[in-house]
Image (cartoon, rainbow, N blue to C red; front, side, top):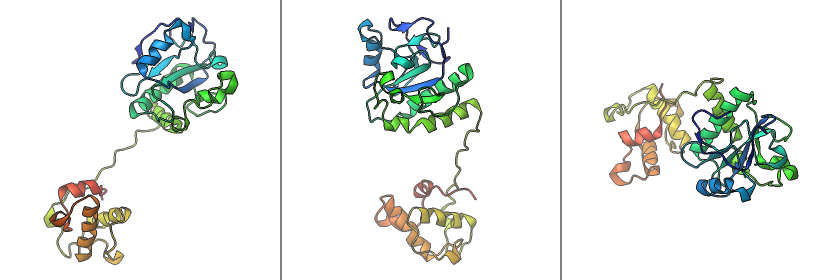
Length: 257
């Protein structure tokens, strides 16, 4: 028996081959072209002659329909060698954040359990993270499944799986300068924080007035620059007077210096 820890088991289904999984070369991404409830009902209907190892709703927990020691009926000639995941949605949907996380958790588990390599593949005889359409006619001819948007997310799934496994460190969250207070912004005041603010205003297309020679000095040009940023945020009148406030400062994301 091979069930993924943390996944909700919703099997069994009559549409599977007990003990029929000969090898696990990798994970195949599908799209349900339907809803989670509808797909589960269809995969449990003997008339469908179809199933998948895992179902991935747009929100919520990953759900396992078929034990990975058993063969699901998801991609015809590929069934003996691949684990399948059906993602709720319709082409051209992309995976939601929850679905991407579930897929990454599954890929990480398959890497630990079956030594599935953490790489993309477009080869039905390869190994890694594939997609239904790569198998062509031999896999049922569903060449548009799961859609370009989901295929393009394979890199993100693999990167997240590596983080889960500790292969790459979790990227640090960016930290930003706290609002230094309105009194900080007085004419002639020099500070590395002001220089960092200038770089962010340039990036936002709002710093049209400040001389680079005085990049760390607060002056009249900065008032105009910051007013442009405030207007970009939707402020008008006194709200766009060029004096930094806590809310507009927090949205500018001035990096720590």
